[in-house]
Length: 176
Image (cartoon, rainbow, N blue to C red; front, top):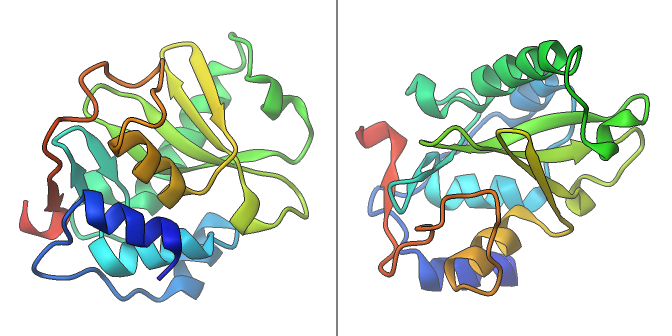
């Protein structure tokens, strides 16, 4: 377990049912990219689910469609392509070959992505967060971001002002 995942488990209790074991090759083929190691460990520990009844951690192939990373990523890619025909792209997306892969969303309609660049190192991918026409960038892993957000070390200007909650809760998608 990475230090950031260990820190996250201290802030956000693990579900009693455990996480998910996945066929990562299948997910990575569908997403057309290698996923970061810390994200794989995060899903193995927690699975997809809701953090503080707000942030929806996506899981590849989740049986609950709301949490299915493969479905949501494909929908977001199509929606962003349509949107960017009329609106400005974030600066990071102006480089040919760059793409976004969604790893979380919220019940308010914000989306959290990895910025995937040709030839990049999956474990070093920046996070981009989008809400309405606003974008934020964080140069850290998913587990580092979640731990830092939950303990108040970082505060997003895009995510809901009431996130995180004072008491953290994880609800597994497979129980909803």
